[in-house]
Image (cartoon, rainbow, N blue to C red; front, side, top):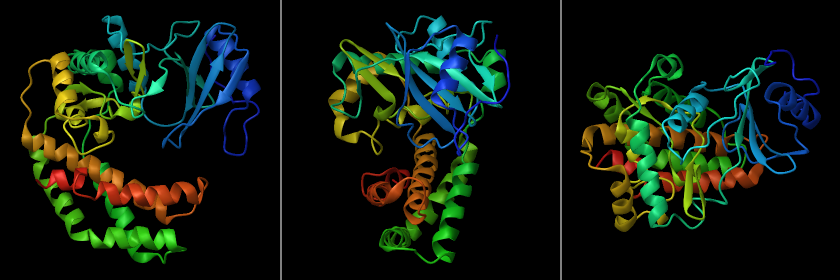
Amino acid sequence: MCHGGDIHGPDGNGRASIPAVIDHVAEDFGIHLTSVEAIDGGVDRAAQNLRGRTESTSYAIKWSAGGSAAGLVVPSALAERGVRAVAAPVRTRDGRLWSERGGRRLSVTPWVGDRNGLDGGLDEAQWREFGTVLAATHALPVTSDLAAVLPVAGHAADLAATRATEALLRDSPPVDAIAAEARTIWTDHAARIAAVVDRVASLAVEVTPSTVCHTDPHLGNVLAGPGRMWLIDWDDAALSTPEHDLMFVLGGTYGGEHIGDRERDWFFEGYGPVTIDPRRLAYWRGSRGLADIAFLAGEAFTPGDYGDTWRARAVRLLAANLGPDGLITRALA
């Protein structure tokens, strides 16, 4: 019963109406929702994220036009291997991990977790389980099913985004004080940004992506509950190297206020012995750092649908990302 066709009743942004979501989830997955509400979908502008409820269960529902199917295939493969810190997608009535609607993927996953990992960090057991789930991810064999959907991680898109943002800030007049501040911050750090661009390009020969990675396992993508944690948002899963994931617990990125030596020790008790290659670590820190500052500067500089409150926050985050504890600085260490 999983089939294509237009999403009936979309709004002007191509988003499905609530009645359409209820109908499609029933038709494709056999789940009869009693209510659906929109949730904060983060920075993925190509996705519509919702929470659906039945009389007894809640589900995370995603209707996405972007990314690859790896975000569903990888957690499904982990769940099949007994990894409990992932939420396996609900299969459609004909056994697929997603359905196709209007050229987009419609997926349903059990709703998990009571709070975000950024809200108070993780306890000892949760940190160990965090290490365990990433170790299991890195140990996944690259089957034909995974190879068919996993992109190969690299730096080309991040360098292109950096250059495009640099050109935007250089060639376009700022429309207001927020945009002007974003341009000033970028200009003040232009030499260091250029140095990271050069370093990432030079380190690329040291990196051979061959390991299944989440690529975005910061604490904002960890949900915690009593005695449990779940690693979510696998949409950027790719073939990479372990350092791509491990950099998120080694310092210089989101959630650092909750990650000290004690937390890292707990994490690696779960993960197991590992040798970190400092050149690959610098490569991924630089590539991700460039992607983050390009996104934040572009958001701050350009008025859009998300309002000045978000643009002002993006300026603050841009400054922090370029500060002494940010990935840009650590990539040059």
